Amino acid sequence: MEIVAIEGNTFEQIKQRFADFAKQVKTLCGDGRNNEQWLSNTEVCELLKISHRTLQSYRGNGMLPYSQIGRKCYYKASDIEQFLNQSKTNPDESIPIYFSLYRKRQITCERHCASKPFFSLGL
Image 1 (cartoon, rainbow, N blue to C red):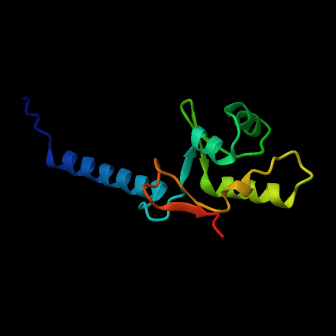
Image 2 (tube, one colour):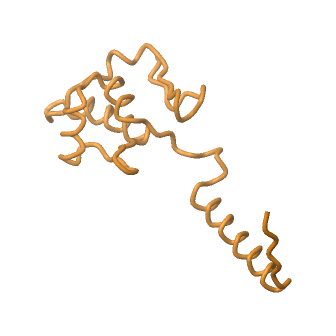
Image 3 (cartoon, rainbow, N blue to C red):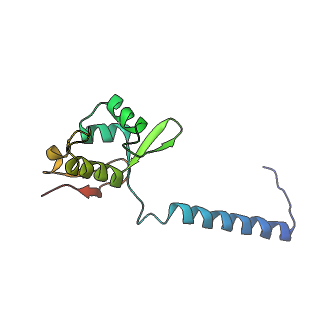
């Protein structure tokens, strides 16, 4: 193990920069209580009963907003719910209506939100 000696002033500057960085992370990510729930491609496909290719078309056409980290796409639960509501209120559009099968149960996001439901489509 190597011991490195630095001046007290330099150490205080490092501590301050780290505290500023931690504050920025907390501001950007929040404290975890009100974070939006995110779904993966597979979870959205299962929820909407569509293929991965159809989901890709929805992304490409701008019908479904998403965020991408590396090569993985994630979808806000609120955007999926809004998408389902749009398909209900605009049946003339080419958005298929898949929400009827899910009215009878509560959907949960096992990977991203533990056991808390991200929204309820129950009666």
